[in-house]
Length: 401
Image (tube, rainbow, N blue to C red):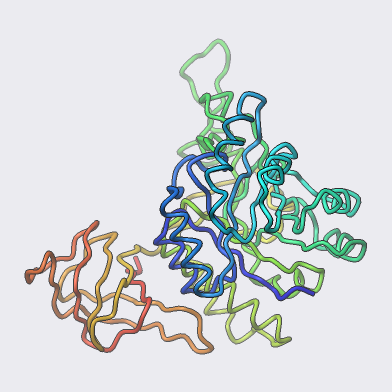
């Protein structure tokens, strides 16, 4: 069996570096076209940097070409792939069979991964894709653990599944709602997320008289899904035959990517070694509550069982402050700021995964911004911050709300 792998998202080079530092075995990201995010992607120059950065640290790079290919886009996709020929990605992920043909036509020699968008639910489909040159399947999000086991028992293809992040109301994410309501095609990376909008009931002859469908003052997210959280089922997925555990979140912050990656890496390392994780469950629960999320579910099929009183607020218990870019001395670091921090304030600092976490609280003693002493470190700047205790490499500052 292939070594178990954490596959983490990267929307830019900062997130990629955070994923690598915090325990990812593989990182997936897109370029300027033909993936399912039209923003938060890499330029050609940053793609080269990203692949080199990963390779130097023994982390594999997975490039996304998973948009659905319309007839009029074939030439542009072929040209785009030609510009990427010199970049040694470890794998390219596709959804569309036509895109698969173009990738092979372009001479790519790495592995081909098939996106969850193709809704692979059975071993017959798995064997078909393997016969077409696919090395790994990202299974449909609707597949059960028992079905995973049966697919694994009847094939020898690598199996990957999503274990954490946003879910989609539509089958394996194939949705026309955004295109219908906003003109933005979800299957080509431009989803406007209308499933997250609030909806009310209006009687035909009483325009403007809105009735909430459920007991939720702002309207109902009747189409919205909870967030997936499978950290307590890592062992079961591993036993069923999953070898690649995927985290959703290219649009999320570097803090989100780092913290979720380290939690799942820790849980997977324990499961792979056959060790119980009971002593860490409280730690997992607290850390999972300190990233922005909707209510969690570990069961896609049963999460709609109580829709008569359904509210899916976006939960934010923590504010991401900044990420260390360089440690300057035992108590001093350069920090790329995302939210303000003032001298005298105390923050929690988290670190990459270790057996016993090095996370700690620290108070800011002094700040240097733009080479002069300051009382505040501002968003968008990189400041030199001195703390009241030693700090370590790759730290991330946060404020618990």
